[in-house]
Amino acid sequence: MNVLEFTARKTQQQKISMITCYDFWSAQILNRTDVDTLLVGDSLAMVMHGMESTVHADIDLMALHVRAVARGAPDKFVIGDMPFLATRKGLSQTMDAVQALMQAGANAVKIEGEKGHAELIAHVVESGVPVIGHLGLTPQSVHGLGGHKVQAREAAAAEELLQSSRNLAAAGCSALVLECVPASVARNITQALAIPTIGIGAGPHTDGQVLVLQDMLGMNPDFKPKFLRHYANGFETITAAVNRFHTDTCRGCFPTAKESYR
Ligand code: KIV
Image (cartoon, rainbow, N blue to C red; front, side):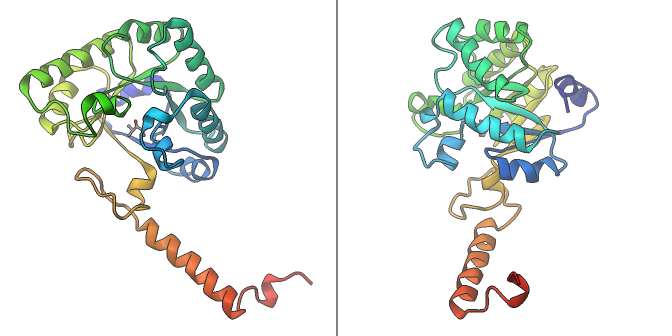
């Protein structure tokens, strides 16, 4: 996968798979899978660090995780998420953040929102850095949106979202993540754009899908929003394995002679 393939995939009607990845060891596993792209999403603030929202991720944290993922998955197209307010403090600070993520090993950056920074996005693209847009539920704006809610349910909001999507495509984005919007809204946007849309909670008509790795592996059995499919029972698998190790240790049946040095 390289950035030119995003639009080619759409033209060929081949879907794009994207999965979040935050660390070296899972990157090594994902590097050996068929998945097309890895997103070092700022959701790592919550998933990896137990923070309350993605608002708490900063550029140092993001660059640290991008570096680990790039080391572990050298064959994958890695997208680094621009953190909260990274594009809202002017051109120079935006470019510093872009530089930090790209020099950490990202192949592209993802930027939430459009209003007020479409020109900055165009400048990043003109600088030779592929940009993935992100509209719909933009978690960095959780406080402004009044929570993690499905967006663009009303006709006027759907029309506004379509216009923002067009603006991002015009600014040169290579693809657009659409998060938590009605399937019909995502379908209209997907049909209107030449660049691919990648959905999460946006129904089946987008040009690709993205999920958070830990969510799709079922690491938190209590987290099951409508859009999520569990592809494994990670929580049960890990707790069972750790409990087996604990029992074997307590009973003295680990390690055996075969597992000991002579
Ligand atoms: O931060 C993230 O993981 C994301 C995806 C959910 C699209 O933005």
